[in-house]
Image 1 (tube, one colour):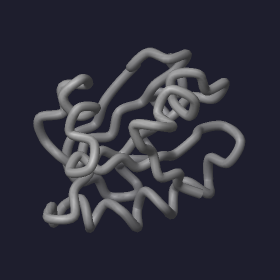
Image 2: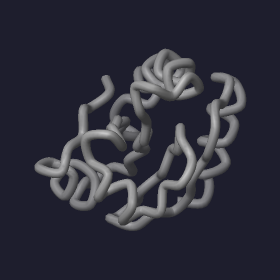
Image 3: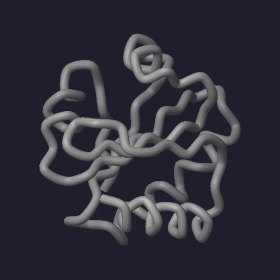
Image 4: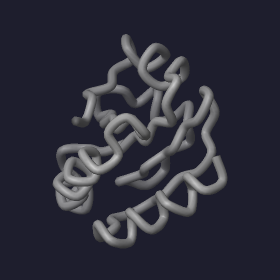
Length: 108
């Protein structure tokens, strides 16, 4: 399951989360973002209980995109204990993304 994040639930769902969180910063006009959406959704079920998946629209919440220095999308930022631990920018195939998440998890 992928959570819809907003300015209202960001602190609770991301910064105060007991699980690591991966956020897809995206926009409706971004082709690579639209290609990334089904990959992201598909992977979310594989990490149930281990990693929380969320999406945040940079159109609706530009202040959060600016706060986390999102300059290119799609931008996947991984948070652990309220801190950014890594980021992946640009479209990723499912196998590539799964491999990168595995290496990030190994460091947590």
